[in-house]
Image 1 (cartoon, rainbow, N blue to C red):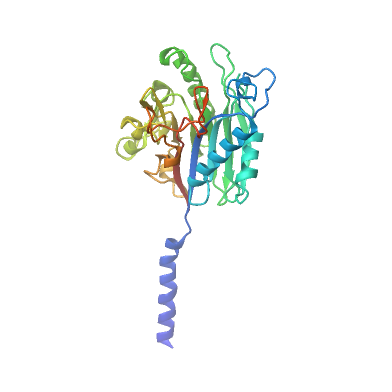
Image 2: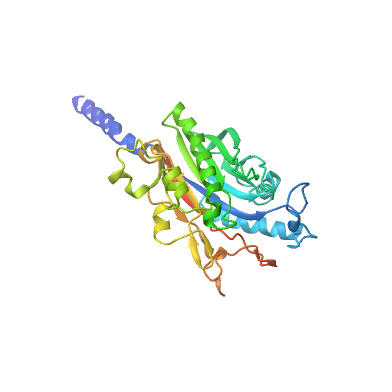
Length: 344
């Protein structure tokens, strides 16, 4: 009898020791992609989108649109072993109907939801986000207006609040900052405004709860070493965090793309120079907390062979839909970026 009791006690003790190791961990893939002029074929009143119509300079037809959606879907499915990422931020999309069409036609087996708002951009392109409804519940969607010094309309910043299935909340900010048109220095002030607008919105959240999970993604038209990130956002590289930023009260965000950028990698090639314009930034607790955590070192430029030009003077660059006015039937002029997160 005593032997039986001893065995039972040991079994219970062993179970109590190993059970924490058996807690399920879900590895989630988050991604961002500039969809490069994902327009429908219909001209919108008061929008500069006429070139992307059948009669316009690009001769943009339903056939070409569907081919592009199929191309983009093929790449998106490759981003994760679950036939698609759990969160995908997008920019350069004209209307939510295009995202809906892509999901209905090419993602029938995925339970994706859409977060989207129309913005005042003159060309009519917006930011959007799709999310895995098996992992997240959509709580709210907000468009944050960016007021440029010239008052020229530009893209809103999309703020999306999601709640995971273990009740962790995450704020996702999808960005497409003003372009470098007119030159880097001349246009820099516009991205300063976008950076400050983003910072103000995040600061409002931190004032409520400094432990909010915050993920910032987008095409920023600036690199991690530009002043909009260093001076305005005070964004730091993740690899230096444990060594230099233990007292991180003055650190605003951590830039997952910084390390690749300083090594010369990029998501866009312009005049044979790589630029790391597409980035992820995260709040401190997505590094330090146990419940919802960035998988260190997982950020990468996602470039399967099918989206890389394999010959000519643009060899190695992203394979776009158009080269100037010439239809190429490719994907985008940007490579996507992805990162993995763990939910305990």
